[in-house]
Length: 299
Image 1 (cartoon, rainbow, N blue to C red):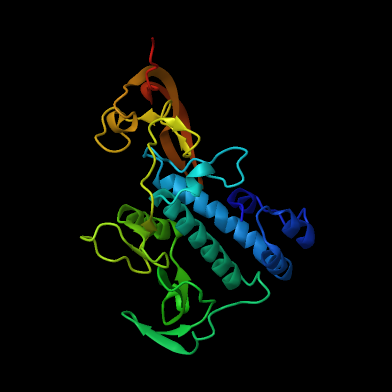
Image 2 (image 1 turned 180 degrees about the vertical axis):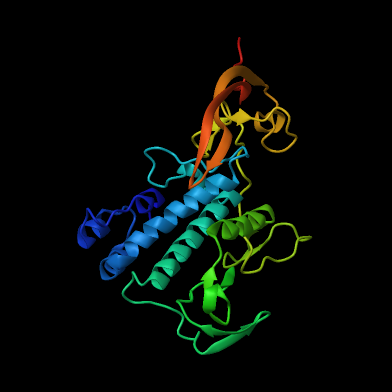
């Protein structure tokens, strides 16, 4: 299914049949499921957008920065046609975003065929004592849930508490998947062609929660449309950083351009009773550094 199309779904302007027949890449069974559950399309699109945003946030300072590709139905271009660790992360974060969004829609009561966790009834106990289960607990995501409570009593005291299980912020989920990306396992097809095996026998076998990849990542230093690399020419880098956002690493040793630009920012902010903050508009001259492109060979 097209990631780009899903991330731009708008059920308000299209009917279910028209929408499901328009999404590129759907086979007959998938189109039927789409028509049967049109209310899922909005949270599905929202989840896809969340996945894109978090991918770009966590890779913003790396050579591959999860850039989307204009006029490409797969959203990330040819990088998704490869079995690289970047492709593994994109599939993982996209799936997580969809599950997260649909689960949240269930808890909010906006979907017809699901709702709150029916097992959270009666009373429970935590380190603060006894509480009553209430509200609407999320019931589709097992990890990264937290107990949220509301106090009842005189003057806001917690004589009684009503609690429910809610998902953590999606950024924490994305951060967890980023650690899985860093520790992804290189696998290859077994000789019988029916299973995967670890490429390096010194590495442990991956678990169901690990990310795996079959191909090495392409060279993201230079633009290459065949492998889905946009290159790092023109990317902003940090001259003083020794990390992946530093000019030496980001620019792949090619050097960088420096220019001075005027930067606007808020300053001298003061709180006024009641209730607003007033700031002055300030400006300063700053150095900006951008990566040079590859040198052209001359005869």
